[in-house]
Image 1 (cartoon, one colour):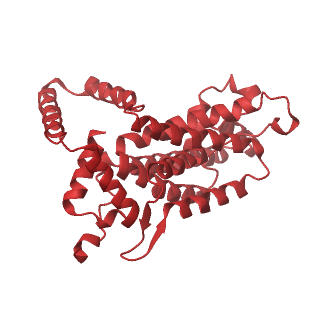
Image 2 (image 1 turned 180 degrees about the vertical axis):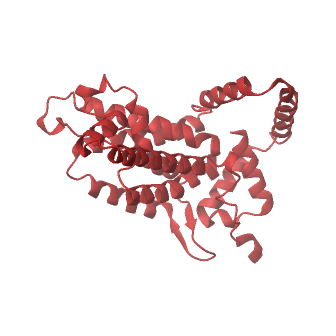
Image 3 (image 1 turned 135 degrees about the horizontal axis):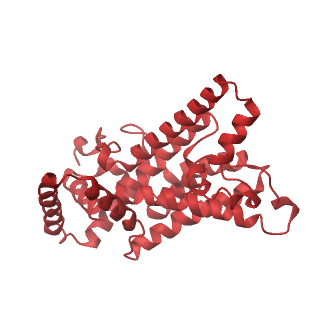
Length: 298
């Protein structure tokens, strides 16, 4: 095989923004972090005591103890968008990029945001429900912030999809995804060793990643309803004079996908096996095109 087939494509993990759900999530988390701490700074400037500022912000964004949750139900969706400090945010976004990009490249960008949302919700539910068990160790008065449940979901999903996948950091240096997943799990569990409740939150996130991939393999699309809502909202705000052009574009996309639907599942499986053995950059241009089209259909 020629050397060219092994060259790293600059756009392999950085497709256009509209088709890059991992980048969208990273930007969303970054914006949420900036807004959170900007509001915090403004409240300090206007003279609100620091304790009240923390109570106001954390109490309305972070996932609270189960006894308080019924009054703060929306926190099940907000707690995963904000991290406590910049270095925690930076670390989490690097892990999100590593494992989220693997999921995105193998099953399509439309599966990334659903996994993120489902994992936060299920992880949060696990965190709340375990507090109902009458065990002293599970009693908690702490609030939770951070994307850890979603990160574990992407680790679980990527390992489930392609356990022999290798991440290439250059033409010759690569790391098996199982090794990277092991390092991540070790680090994150060392960080929660004194907080047993968070173990169940991470367990919920991991189960989401595993079950989601199993559903995809069974032919289900658990995240399609989210994109249907996004599409309905887009149509609702699209001016009438632009809708015909949008309709034509949708028909072109559907026709294009239909014209390539003859690619067999075996062919796709063979390509995935090749990625597992030699990495993404070992694919020929034709194989990359087939995989990209199959991902878009998914």
